Length: 131
Image 1 (tube, helix red, strand yellow):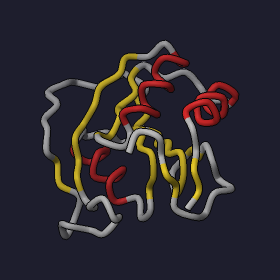
Image 2 (cartoon, helix red, strand yellow):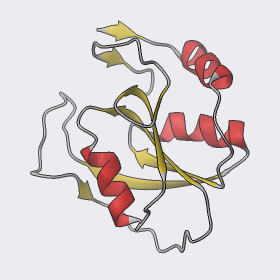
Image 3 (cartoon, one colour):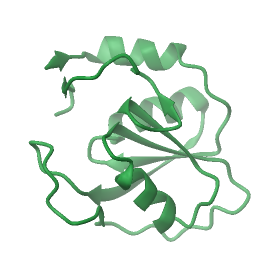
Image 4 (cartoon, rainbow, N blue to C red):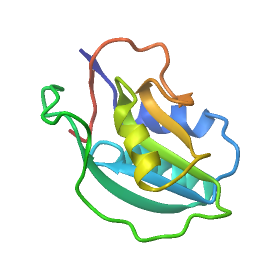
């Protein structure tokens, strides 16, 4: 288990190069903090989407990620970045893209599999400061 603090996470995000985005969609619960930091850095609008797939011990509790909140928004013409803390299989990020009807959204995680990975060198479980 690796411990990461807010200072280290914030600094890595500050130094992480990203293109501009209009909207950052944070996957609740774990993606709220990184999405907030990234939206602030990019001066982008922040929207959150509650999706649940795994329990606190990282075991799947549903067959597929389940949407637990609604977003009624037209994203046409907007550049979107979907953010979560961790992506093991990519199913939650793909569920968000499908639900929001986004063909061309990019994805970012702190650890795991996505278009952008802030801590690609970490391959063990992380003790996030917001958990």
